[in-house]
Image (cartoon, rainbow, N blue to C red):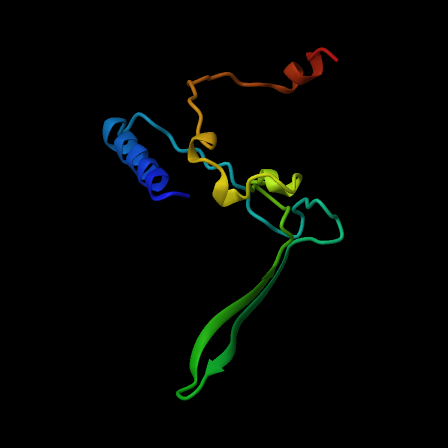
Length: 121
């Protein structure tokens, strides 16, 4: 990402924060990962091993917590670069910032199960 793109991105966030304070809502689209998370390859999943208090660091044997985390690349909420399916496509750092932001408008509509059942096939 170029210095100009990075500066522009920070500038947009700053202006949005100042001009729209209290008028915006940030919605986190992320999902926590656990052993039930769906992965592209079902044989490779999310593994977390908690190892609190199992280690001491010389010379004074200070205690510290450590964990092990193993996860495949394609699990949970993430951004796939065009390069993933196209050897000549952009890698994540080559995607122009303006391709990652879109304008939206507030829409308050609630879907109930009946809406999906009545949805045309």
